[in-house]
Amino acid sequence: MFKPVQFLFAALFALTLSGCVTGGTYSGNMPGNTGVVTNDPNAMPNLGWQTAGDRRDLAQQSAAAQRDPGRPGLVVSAKKVKVALLLPLSGKNADLGQSMLKAAQMALFDVGSANFEMVPKDTKSTPGGASMAAQEAANSGAAMFLGPIFAEDVRAVKPVSSSRNIPMLAFTTDWTLGGGDTYIMGFLPFAQVARVAQYAKTHGGDRVAVFAPTTPYCDAVIGTLNRAGVSAVKVQRYAPQQADLSAAVAAFAQETKAQAPLSYTFNALMMPVGGESMRSLASVLSQNGINNRNTRFLGTGLWDDTALSGDPAVFGGWFAAPDPAARRDFERRYSENYGGAPLRLSSLAYDATALAAVLARTGGDGNAYSRDRLMNQRGFAGIDGIFRFRGDGLSERGLAVLEIRSGGAKVIDPAPTAFLGSGS
Image 1 (cartoon, helix red, strand yellow):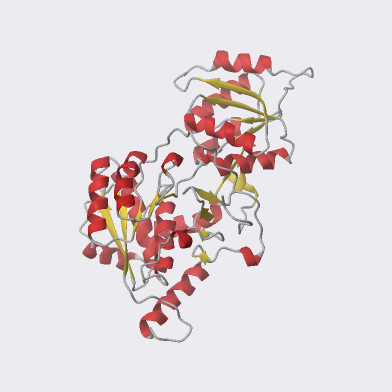
Image 2 (tube, rainbow, N blue to C red):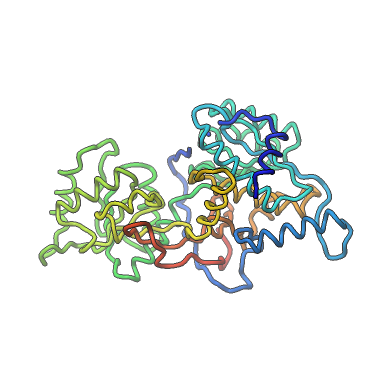
């Protein structure tokens, strides 16, 4: 059981518990697709911790290093490596911060070692608090920042990170903040869109239309479709604050009708919205004859929402996301340790902490988090699947394709287990 470690952390860190992700505009070159993937064992990520076997092997290495640091063939640094976990541990986002801290503690328990130290720092749910927390961490010798979460907090920490040459694994989805010493861990729309669109293209959804609000996020979705070789046959935009879509959907349905009854000029419809907005849109589309019987609905990671599995109007829709199998194991263990379910972003904190801990084992000479090591082209394998960092600081992920069904989304095309080729 993990509970004894909880008391250890309570003693080590006098924390005021409290922490989501914001997006941003994108004005540069659109990030490319994740690329070709393979199951070739020679290309497998060289760091994995998502299975019980992986965690057991890492724990055995750590124990062996503590028993006999000079053991031949055992490459483990003896120098302590410290990282700072920048989370909103007080303020309005306390639940998120607490959940991510607990996930990070799990990772430290699973794969941590004697030469690795994680120090939580409270960003206090404000950019000013984030900047102060980063400065305190830098002054105390932190070799890397894990977090923060909010885009405005990341923006406030970047000057500290840059001036002190401290890399930052940020949990935001604001891709404009990537680059330099900042690496974006958040789930980005680019690979999600390319993955599901390319799958649809080869499975009966080769004529894609888009119905989306006029937001930077949706601009990125449309741009990614083009880069993925999927040209939209029709693009309909609407104001994001527009509550009643009846007239817009009716006009869209009329404009795209084909000659055959109940047929349209497209056979797949990309709708990059989630939650109640998606459910309302699906209902209005159905009222106008566009439904999951004559059109394949496509979405983004915003559809990774169990609430959609209770709405028949979206059944049969496809989206790309991390394979939920590994996450289910993480959620089970988290629940056993803490008595409740983790919030969705908690797995990012787990993977970032695990990555930092594993790299620290052999990089205590000050090189643990060098650009070359963080940008390992074979990538890393975590709770949310394989991932790696690009030259622009954005993350690429190996994603599964899922179909929304009653009772939950089901994987219809598995996530890859390795990347093939170098990232851009």
